[in-house]
Image (cartoon, rainbow, N blue to C red; front, side):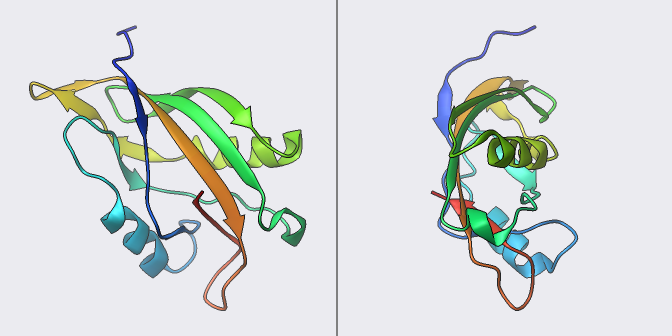
Length: 131
């Protein structure tokens, strides 16, 4: 396996929603992501399906986005409990990325992603947002 190049923080200020829900919030999230060649860019996002008891909770993940854009090698850096951590990892495992590039070549890269669970909206389910 190719060595991981560096740690990158994926940041955004908007909400993530499940793919099955309205695409406007997903599209908004995807449009606000950093799109530098040296950073993996999310192209498909899936929010965790969790209950209202997790509203306001955060899970901090680190994982590798491989040269094909698939996340793997998850490490949970912090979470209020194992149930929420598992749900968040299950959701992010379904994400797909445009991989980072160095000199035009896709490379594996380690990323950090804080996920905060926020209130549901009338248009869709409970959401996850960047912490």
